[in-house]
Amino acid sequence: MFSSVDKRIARPPAPAQKHVMTLNLIKLCVGATSVEDLAAWQSSQRGFKSPSGGKCYAHTTFQTPKRQTELLAGGSLYWVIKGVILVRQPLVGFGDGTKEDGSTCCLLLLDPALIPVRPTARRPFQGWRYLTSTDAPADLKRGTKDDIAVMPANMRKKLADLGLI
Image (cartoon, helix red, strand yellow):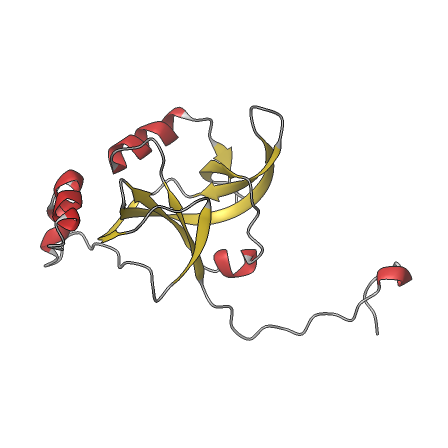
């Protein structure tokens, strides 16, 4: 009946989930002025191994997301650069880490791919926030009729700042 060996904390098995809704995170990219800055900063950092063994980058955050199952069901970290959501990185896992001052933190393990998204203005906020898939900006498709995708990132940002895209 109970699957736990320790009877003091024995609980019945959790019911099987039929469908896990994908969830994302959104975070300010402090210090970067462009997607290229973010890419350069990440490539200068120590690489990590994802749970599947591939290369990934880690970003530290004080708070550990509680909804990890939903985040790992295809979720991404959407980066806000200079007040505009410009790019996302798929989440590949979570880990425990230590900051330079010795305090513990959560590691957000990110796929190295930076995927451009439709520029969307976003006000400043502290830490990270959950972002539903319905509220997340759409990816910019390369090689299609999406003219925005072929624009340089700084031009996309300026047009988004003006409210033109």
